[in-house]
Image (tube, rainbow, N blue to C red; front, side, top):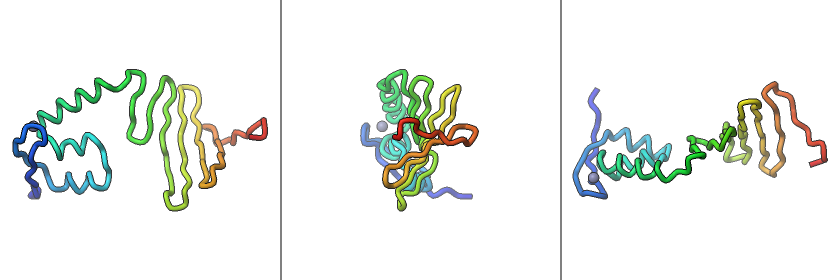
Length: 124
Ligand SMILES: [Zn+2]
């Protein structure tokens, strides 16, 4: 199958390069900075930019697509309904895996890895 290619110009060095048009379509729906850079910079400039960006990230924090890692904690967005305003976040450590459900009014319900609800003992 023939790929439709789009012509791009590197914002850094001005060289012309090509990327599949699907690339752009994909990026428009799922914005990702590395992906965006591949539409703004030629491969060699983009690689340099990525190297710089990764160097600047603090060592302990690892960014994930929908969350981040900090020490033994991984926090991620699992599912959400933007229209209704609720979100389910995951908090995972080597010993525990919690699902944190936040309603559109800010109420919180927490379930552990066995599906058991964590109830506030102090009325929170
Ligand atoms: Zn370039």
